[in-house]
Image 1 (tube, rainbow, N blue to C red):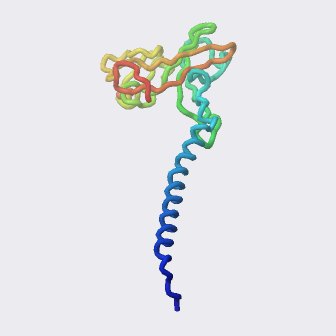
Image 2 (tube, rainbow, N blue to C red; image 1 turned 90 degrees about the horizontal axis):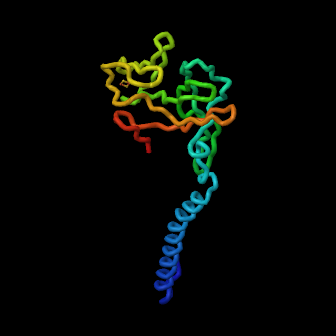
Image 3 (cartoon, rainbow, N blue to C red; image 1 turned 30 degrees about the vertical axis):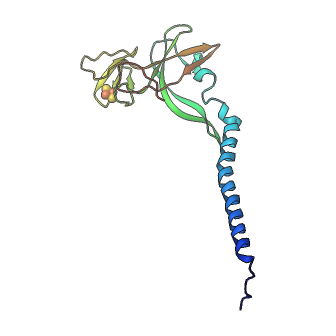
Length: 183
Ligand code: FES
């Protein structure tokens, strides 16, 4: 059997309820704010994934014979998010073509028409797109009069640093006449 409540019990209970509601509301507000601050201050988020100005080291000049034949390379980069860092994750593929002692051309492997993967056919000296039986010349230009592609293969910026080949790896939106970088 419970004891009868005194006259002051009701206001005291209301005060406790209101105080608890205020405290819980404060916690509910502070947790997301604190989480946001932690993520914002995390030093990993301040570093780019692809090094200086988006350039990624792809290979060495020694690995590229000076014969103007395009060769395919997987692009590896470090993937970072707020909490984890994963080293050398494949992020795409490109073709490199050495055209001189220290000259290299880089081209995206992705067809600018609808995004299918292009394959190089050494016997024909051309790139073939299996999605629409279309072809590009070895320099990436459109060589198929019936090609549905609105632009040549996407060329990428290259820097030869000493014996290393660095490429500014980018994806571009398919289906446009202009090269529009993916967001
Ligand atoms: S996707 Fe390559 S030509 Fe259409």
